[in-house]
Image (cartoon, rainbow, N blue to C red; front, top):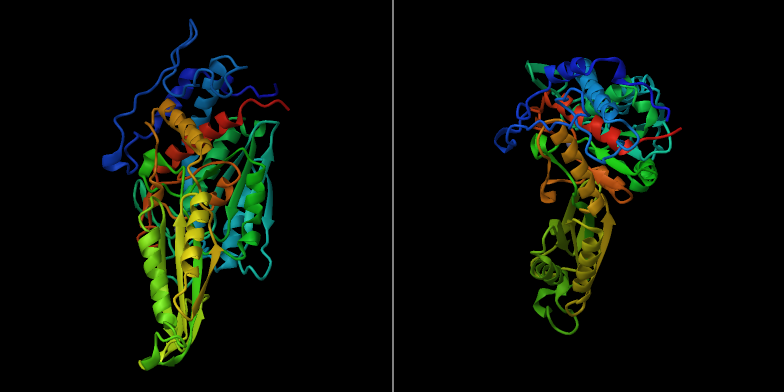
Length: 485
Ligand SMILES: [Zn+2]
């Protein structure tokens, strides 16, 4: 064992008062009506002759407790949460600094600048940092990765993003403190606030002497809001990190407020249907020579999609744009199309583009198969083909994700912060954690509580920052187990 003597130098009572002093009540940060009942502080059963500790409890037989005395892990966790409280004001100042730097996805200099600010902070914790440039065809700034290897325990991957939807020409550029616990600014909750939670949790683990024992990878991507393509390049490093991780935690804001996390999200795939028919005078439509034409065939296919695929849980598909006639131009990049046709001419071509959202890979495969089948059942003298382009993969509700949720729930209850429940995956869009979830246990929605993401009314509840950072830090510490060098 090489663990440092942690908080053992400090009297536990001092730590307890430190940890309690600014621990927010569980409902202060926007949980609102959905907040849990007042937290019940679970108490460890103290060994004889030892004071009862008011916050923090290592679950019996839980991670990290085997080789430790009861007071060791409890004191460690108290020290970590106390450090979060001590370092939170600086983390909020740091958040202000990074919000003031414009990092719209298409502003690479700004994204890199925010990356450099994080790089400095993470390097100060002893992490190896590297900036990963994207090749020019991807046309994005790149990503910041940081890593610490502290032994042979599990590897935990922490995921955030540096970019925002607000480009330099947006009028919404500045941080504004509206109240003690409320700030407005571009990216305050989506997701520079979540990035600040990652940093604060790691700083607390470092200050408590715990980080050096852990294996942690931080991935701060530069293009989450408008992902660079091909995804095989822009998400390659994230996937590589996930492949060698035992758990991935995503710090985008939780839509379910303070007491929820995300175990599943739907992925999406774009599809494009191209239909062809015989052009001719409309007066001879439906005869053996000219058949049904492209418009009726396109309508048949869409109607069949509607009749035969609709209604399955967690599956949706949309037809976003239709163009048809005797000459058709469709540009998927700019989402524009044009067509020429006459009312007395059988149209020879139609293009329809849409999306397909599923919760699992299996559901995606079945939906594609059904759509291909429908597309192949052509009306007379027509043909059709459908192409699929997979974008964000589904994050399926795997049991390993639910186990991570249970672990977080236990952490939250132990900290007196109430239970954590899963968010309905139908309420979640696609996110970068989905790329990691294909390879490792994954849990998302661990970022700050905020409102108005992607609008000039974006705000963050600042009191959620230390709450989320405490949970994250203790979760990381417990997942990290006891390492030996
Ligand atoms: Zn966003």
